Length: 611
Image 1 (tube, rainbow, N blue to C red):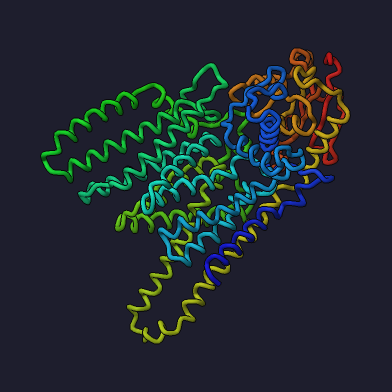
Image 2: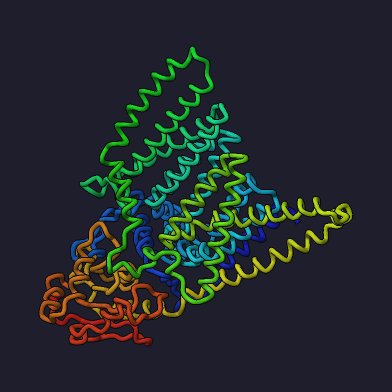
């Protein structure tokens, strides 16, 4: 069987694993977009809004962050491109059903398609067979499957795809045509326009280029093609990112974890200048003395510009703010959200702990072995893989949400370790005193060793990956039922000026309330406009019944939804802050109008609200 057929088989296997939760996500003919949180509903709202107002993208949503409303500050490219796809497939007039099906199928399809760029990138480091093996490992990586399951329509599913495409096109530009550098820059622009955290891609690629240039300086040669590729890529990305400067705010942020700020263009500028400085320095080392004066003058001019940018408040402020964000503890109301959990503390049970421990051992061993190989032969693709593995590995330990992105590095690292084991096995056999000629002629022992090592590992990963669909348990159907009950049993509200809002105990439910119940939500995960979160905190931490009711009336809150967990798939914990909220006395004195079948969701009505 040739490589193309094998890759197609891997693709369909990967797709199967990612749609294995299909029946869990269908309820009474409706697709349920609750897969860990309700962010998918926010994206659905924005996609439908973009389609209805195409080519414009509305900036304000009155149903979120009620009664103030909120501006959509998340980068718009992801939702806008999805809207364009829906318009094309719907021949200009897509139905709501078609939009939902497209949005539900995109994560597993893109997740499965990512195996192809993983394969092509791996070919620069590994043999053909082991590049295929890397694709197999990636296809069954449970952490990637988690973010690319059916109906998990959040931008997280696209992050690994963009990440691997950026470096793949960059390498193609270095080795083939510089036109690929433009594609790499465009993907950086799309990625940053999808997720602000894609800034880390700019950082990893830039550091990799500089490290490679340092190796070339030590070898007393210039990095002509690498320099040209880097300049074109980052210049293309800069022109796109400058267009993404968020027009929704009067204030331009020096740093923001939710929207485009000055930090992204500053970082690209800094790397462009660093590329120039390093290249000039290479020329100083390599070129003759006659050219050194001109090069020195150019180097000094670039250094002055770099100095001015480096010590500007925007760049340094953003840099230190980012470090502080990753190192500090989250606020109390966010401490139990998956976005803020570390990779280690998010595990539970012996299977999870054992699995994570094995992964940590593999990564540490792989990095050490790969580092030795990279120092011997400092190829750019090896440098990139090593640096990205270290950076993304640290980020994953700190924030579990990076685990899907880190799956790319882990898969290639596993295949690399496997390749090294086979090479060492061959070499040790050659050096042994046994009749090696006969052993090498008979390839059965080698094939048997491959089988014994790879098959059990693949089976373990496959079963663990397939089991990921269990994370979308039937619990989310109760959330859907509760929101549907609210839609059918509460007064309708006007679209432009809603008469009342709904207060959930966890802001993550807000998007689902707006989409399913078609009612405004007081609290949502729009953190740049935190009025709703402040109201949520004040109400649930208030112990005086009269003051609590006053908060409801002042903010025109008609209903309160209470749940024992901040996330749908989490089990109820006795020491959970949300379980403590469940037992508040002033809530028991409100009129309870709905109780879910499991008893974990309650809806209270504010009788004093003027609707």
